[in-house]
Amino acid sequence: DVKVTQSSRYLVKRTGEKVFLECVQDMDHENMFWYRQDPGLGLRLIYFSYDVKMKEKGDIPEGYSVSREKKERFSLILESASTNQTSMYLCASSSFLDYLNYGYTFGSGTRLTVV
Amino acid sequence: GENVEQHPSTLSVQEGDSAVIKCTYSDSASNYFPWYKQELGKRPQLIIDIRSNVGEKKDQRIAVTLNKTAKHFSLHITETQPEDSAVYFCAASNTGNQFYFGTGTSLTVIP
Image (tube, rainbow over all chains, first blue to last red; front, side, top):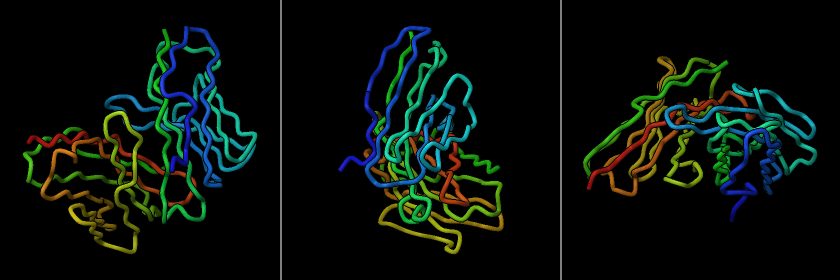
């Protein structure tokens, strides 16, 4: 039944490491998103993608990059992890044509701790 | 771009009472307004939504109202139960490409 899968539930990384967060969806959605969730700040958009090899910056892209080589997979990359990137990361997907029926589907989240 | 504001940030109610969460949006072109519930440690899940051509929608104990003129929409939960305790997010969208989320409301239902 799980339709958006994030590869890791919990991650602990060291400062300066390169970190990859993976997200896979099996609904053939065109749109995929990476959000960061912090207490009191809600869901903040980092990057999103409308199509394969396409990416757009969200509200807080600094320190992050993304990759979408295949339609079903959207990766978030922390080039050099820092402690202020400790957070819950949520991936989501949506259908461009069918969003009025289904909205977003979220993954279970990856709780990243940078030490 | 769109700006969605959500209030209150925290809400405590006694079991059986009603809870109301309000959101405002800025872009008059927004036409889809979903609400998500996120239980502790779980993913946000869609619980109800409303389109701009509808003023109110109800699903059992939850309802959503939309006032397009005032650009605000609200979530109403009646006869609250402890399992309603969660964080609720509102969102607005005018395309299929991006949703704009409110900052969330943490609802606690006190038994």
